[in-house]
Picture 1 (cartoon, rainbow, N blue to C red):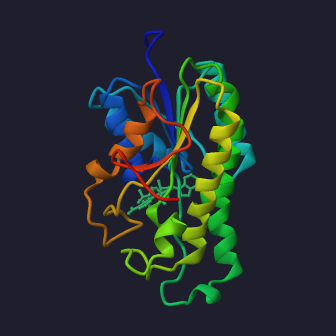
Picture 2: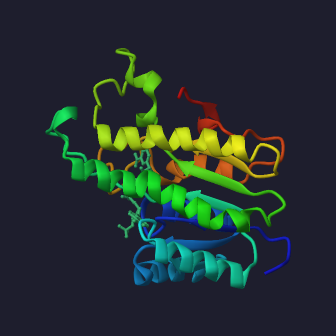
Length: 243
Ligand SMILES: NC(=O)c1ccc[n+]([C@@H]2O[C@H](COP(=O)([O-])OP(=O)(O)OC[C@H]3O[C@@H](n4cnc5c(N)ncnc54)[C@H](OP(=O)(O)O)[C@@H]3O)[C@@H](O)[C@H]2O)c1
């Protein structure tokens, strides 16, 4: 690995948008740590890509486990001493579509927030010291258009009737965290942005309209932002979305 090769870590990268994000970043010459909560699954996924000559290696990281996050950050610190790109991609969708917003169980709310919000905050806190060692740190929070309160309040919006509250509001909160962290880091080279991948056909979204290659593009674009790029924004394929 050359000294100026960027190092990225993508959480929840064993399948779906995360796995494709790893492939695209590695194809762009970035050294990528493919993180998965199941170490074996992550190793198999990483080997498939490294077998194609891509600079990919696996790392175990369950974003709901403080011990797992600490061990992963320690591993990266010892091996590389810095991190240039953190993509908080891991996410769950466990709302019951058959239930009204007021009927989703508290367990659903808690489990969703554990991964989609607290998992992101905890992972970011652990890797921030390593991102500060980068000359141009980038944090990408994989949010969703479903987190937009502006769109949810607009009867003309395509998402108006998709009121699955635990998932949607976990992404609204993730957007809020993005704005707060971008503010904290405004005088540093680190940029923090939220993205909406689009409605992408994956295990999470069987009715997705976009293919997975397109679905990973927003994450990759914001990961590879140059110094003139935005921080504290919410975007999809280069277009700014309403909060
Ligand atoms: N697909 C869409 O249309 C869409 C739209 C908007 C936003 N998003 C967001 O895009 C991201 C990726 O979604 P996807 O569609 O690719 O979903 P997916 O195919 O269900 O993949 C989710 C990934 O997250 C991982 N994960 C779940 N809990 C985890 C944990 N505690 N620690 C680490 N990894 C964990 C899963 O790992 P395992 O393999 O171990 O289960 C899997 O790799 C999510 O944040 C999602 O909310 C997706």
